[in-house]
Amino acid sequence: MITQNAPEFSDYLPDGGVLLGLDLGTKTIGTATCDAGWRFATNGKTIRRGKWTQNRAALGELIAARNISGIVLGLPRNMDASEGPRAQATRAFARNLDDAFSLPVLLWDERWSTRSASAALIGQDMSRARRAQQIDSHAAAIILQGAIDRLAGGVI
Image (cartoon, rainbow, N blue to C red; front, side):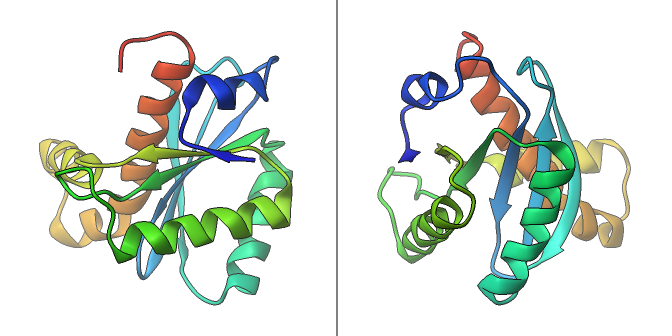
């Protein structure tokens, strides 16, 4: 099940559960997870983006290790909310996730997530090289936090 509707996604997970947040880049996939009560997101590792079979294996290990109940995937939209080629590629990735893991997938608007992540990392006085390593997983945590705030009844 793939949806952009948070309440519909929540209906598939009446008991909550650990969620996996993903920021899909062209070279890497940033990951983040949240607690089962949907209170806080924590950035995870960054996975090198490659062929689907390699990405599926790496994500499968993470899903099994953390007992993931659902996936929140950042949907890259243009500032006017239109969708371009990256959004279409993300939708294709979501279909692959759905087929491979049979977990509910929430497509979450990720506009400003990378910029927010970058500002936060600069605020931590992190070097450019270190920011480049951390940006995708930090953006995944921002995407996931926005989604769980909405899922848990927060204002987003």
